[in-house]
Length: 443
Ligand SMILES: Cc1cc2nc3c(=O)[nH]c(=O)nc-3n(C[C@H](O)[C@H](O)[C@H](O)COP(=O)(O)O)c2cc1C
Figure 1 (cartoon, rainbow, N blue to C red):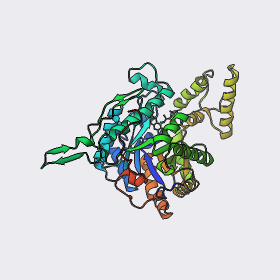
Figure 2: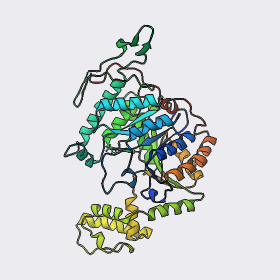
Figure 3: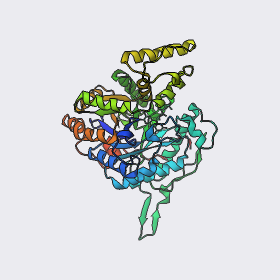
Figure 4: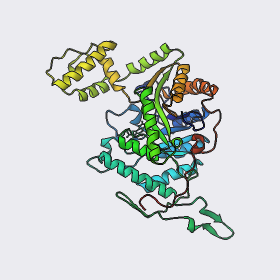
């Protein structure tokens, strides 16, 4: 358990109608991608005193894309409008270091920080999706190691640009006719492997000094970037509490090795959830969502995993057929694993496909509000996380139950705030404003 305010931090990952592939089919919302919808969800999260709302972003879609990312507003544009319509909740958006320039990102998030009066956060991603390159005039995606080298330099330049104005550089002394103090505005003169940026930024220092930095990389380089720079880390935790604890400790230790304090890194565990008055009701709701998945999505994925199997020739309503094709040894082994899995759970091919389509690296919780609050308490107290990144399977329905039923339980246990502690996102997360620096690592 972290020492940060001694209360858990809770973010909401907003994703259209919900984090389940079929959530849009049950949603009562006419347009779960609209600005009005996103505002409604954000206001609900603010009512529940959640720390921040978060918007992911991708730069490529195809027929395998999650239904709720196929049609999505650009997140920083969305945040700037939400900033004007909310007062206390933090606002986080994703932007790629592979397909942007540091000057644009420093200016964009700096602007959101000004508009929101210190509530903005940037989720730093290097963009794993290879298809994205084709939307940015490249034939091939940048290699993984190079993407992370670029990301590190990118973050240094962005931080340098936010630091290019000292806090009191903008004077606006009308009587003396002095608009700014040029002694307090600095070029950064950055020269590195990827960027040459002179600066300064054409925007005064953001209210938080720097918008909060978020990261969610899973590879060794991703974790290193998180340990070095991230103030909030999103973790996928579908391997249980012991795994989560080990990951948590490791990341905190890595942060310490970069001369950071353990409390400067807030680790949040992603949790997909669906709630019901009883465990059975929640399970029924989940089963309903599962049954609405188009089995072709799973079949396509299965065909990628097992290209030698002709799934299309099999009957969807029957258990997986015995193997008639001659597969190589590796494919036979994989096929039999799926077959055994389906037999154990009594799944026909359609249900197996629906299961495969919904596999996710994020933890899944199906149960009652009380059980969810218990689980969150156990994880938090065990040192598996400093808080949670909520991923409701049905966005509005599950969020409403969370706010009205789970939040009060956590408050009663003194594990979650009754009121926002401060004005800025940093204050609410228990993070200090970064001190002013005059140089980037490479300038
Ligand atoms: C909660 C969460 C949200 C994420 N959001 C995004 C996103 O919006 N855009 C993106 O390109 N990647 C996103 N990712 C993926 C990671 O940033 C990262 O690319 C992926 O985990 C692969 O890690 P690696 O590049 O270290 O191998 C997210 C991951 C998590 C856990």
